[in-house]
Image (cartoon, rainbow, N blue to C red):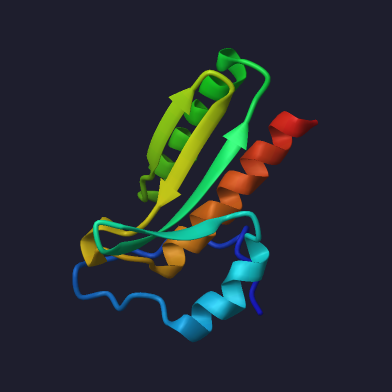
Length: 116
C-alpha cells in the first residue's frame, strides 16, 4: 500500500472515476480519525480539529488553505473558536476521489505540527 502523505493530487475532471469501496478500505486506515459522511447525496471526508484558541485555529486554517492551493484541490473549512471542521470531497465528481484521501493525510500532518 502506498503511503498517502508524500503523494500529490492528480488533475480531476467530471469523467474521473470516484474511488472504489476496495480503495476506501485500503486507504482509510491511513486517516483513521476521518469520518465518511453523506451530505446532499455526496460522500465526503470530514474531521474536526481542536485548538486552544481562535488564533491557533485560524493559523491552522491558513496552512491547510496554502497546501490546498499548492495541490489545486480545495476543502470546505469552518473555523470557529477552538476548532476547525475540514471537509474534503471532489466537486467535479460529486463524491470521493483518491485526492481527498491524500489531502486528508496532508491535513493531519499539518495538525500534528500544531500539537508539538
